Image (cartoon, rainbow, N blue to C red; front, side, top):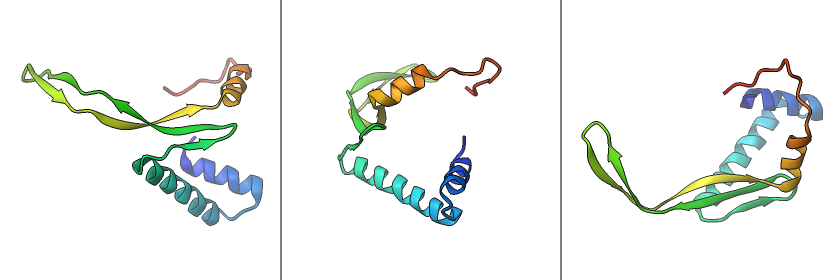
Length: 102
């Protein structure tokens, strides 16, 4: 599902105009990004958490030049689904004819 598909589904189910749904989603994404940039985690009960994870400094390798490269410590965004969310997905019976995109 793409963002446009999500906007269409929310608009169809709620009756809210697509433009308003788009503005709301874009604002939500912007706020999530800004909170993570500011070092704040976001916890949404029953859905999951948007968090930042710390990656330790390490030595990598530039394969083309065959030299060691130092990769500094850095933070990456991550999503951790809530237990209820995970259970719902685990318990879902999928149609065997449905193909998943990789």
